[in-house]
Image 1 (tube, helix red, strand yellow):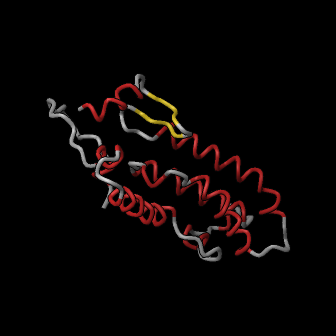
Image 2 (tube, rainbow, N blue to C red):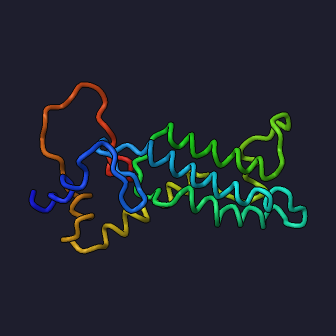
Image 3 (cartoon, rainbow, N blue to C red):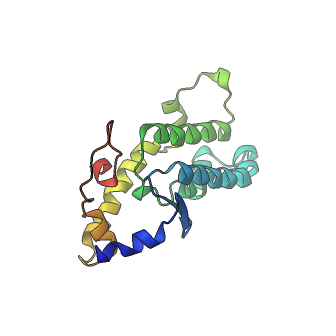
Length: 176
């Protein structure tokens, strides 16, 4: 238990911001997701005039700029998230909305989400997350056995009295 002393001293409150990411004592990423969506929205806002009003740039060039700037801000540190269905829905809605704005599509155009992604050749956010999680897990698996991150990932919680209801998902439960 001595190895995990840094966790107890690091998180004395419900939410702690450390190195740009929000650590929650309840293992929830809602606050982290809100700040990440805000940062990605700000990055898109700065590129809005370039991406939307530039008639000389093709949709592929616009999508590459979008992927390099906005998606990298949106999915930064996402490989270590324990993400739930509602949070995935928020990410998908954000990306679809921004892609439709970038292509100047309106609600009455009746374009499906798959048709929105097709011309830009951009994968869905769910596919990107499913690709990144095992990659990060492989990095953690390859580190030395005495590193804190590996010990934390492969450790088990102390046995406590089980509360009624569904248990909270951990990263181990979500990683496939």
